[in-house]
Length: 198
Image (cartoon, rainbow, N blue to C red; front, side, top):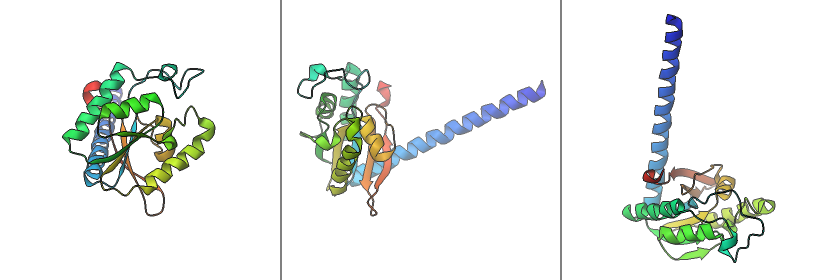
């Protein structure tokens, strides 16, 4: 009986320790992202806001938003809150790019940190899976050319961000990167979706 209690207590202590380490690691990750954004010369890759479902319906067309998966009201709120946060922190966004998909263009527009320019290099790598490698290389090229001043802000898809960084971001999460001297993308940190919306 005492041994079982002792074992349970050890597991509980280990679980608390793991949680504390993970929380500290997440805070450090977020702090690094904010520091890099304030300094500028980096790229912020944002996954579009909440858009229920996976992929796009059969027969989707880029020129017709009604045929695509679109932002929910939660996704719209996530985008507005992310933009409010960036403006409150006085992050100097120099340029805004978006995937051609409507949920990304809508997210970038609602973030409201500058005029939105569609960039095909960040098109949906999940739906266009046969072009995933080419899209990854196109995205890398755009990131590699950015030197600032300010931040290049890109709204794209989770699969694109995963292909570029290895991270699988949540909706409205922002992953901050730069191009390392050796030509590899350097993952600096990330900003979670605004907490009040979770």
